[in-house]
Image (cartoon, rainbow, N blue to C red; front, side, top):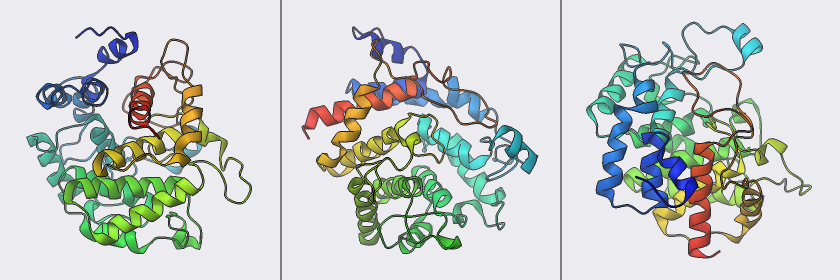
Amino acid sequence: MPHPDPVIDWLLQTDPAIRWQVMRDLLDAPESEWAAERAKVETEGWGARLLACQDADGQWAGGAFFPADFTPLEWHQHGQPWTATCFSLSQLREFGLDPASDRARRTVAQVGAHSRWDEGGQPFWQGEVEECINGRTVADGAYFGVDVAPLVERLVGERQGDGGWNCERASGSACSSFATTLNVLEGLLEYERASGGTAASRGARRTGEEYLLARHLFRRLSTGGAADARFLDLLHPNRWRYDILRALDYFRAAARLTGARPDPRLAEAIGLLRAKRREDGTWPLDWALRGRVWFDVNEGPGKPSPWVTLRALRVLKWWDGVGA
């Protein structure tokens, strides 16, 4: 499907996981067209490749958070591995595997029956102890049709006094973190999209959003400086990591669900995103996480990234289209 915009044309030549989102979010194609392309995620490209890595019991790499053969030495020498069940499910959600497909339904049931968290042996869909992990579990569960209401209720009750979340709360942290807050917000948004949410979950999502907005998505309240220089470097897949594009894409998705207008406090991050665009109209991958993966979906840091470019273009289309 050639397109006169060379960047759009480049994106359309990549993978079904990219193409269907380009069709929906950038080209405003009818659902019948992008849904047909989305269905290919199960049988072609990255989605099919990741599904082919699945264990017979429905897990990936034999574990919930860590591969079965993981050792602390691997983390020290090569970085955190990203091949276990939780990260594979999140990537399938990102690819857009149809949750109504037989393969998705079978996977959800198998993971529920066989996967247990490394931390305490809890059944997978009951969640772990860290809010960061549980936020992603809620997002994956809600997307794939699991009843995650008990885990949502738990997360709502684990908010910090400043309105966000921190996975170090159980260790005594009294303030929120950007990364944990965004992981939980994405989960609450997916839950709201699937079920309508509850008054408590919607209220918690608003306080979490305010935590990020008050900081213009990357600044410290105390000094006004960047809380972490990495927040301005664009990454994909993010896994649990935070950057301004991931946050902007969350606010775009939330507005798409609720009809909310863009908050003016996003403007600075939008400007930084525009400044990162290359002369050819694409955005590069600024850096990549260390650690074992099933396969790469980018060509490497410094190279144009289809994923970063897709997300950046749809954020700017939203921002420019509604008028901030």
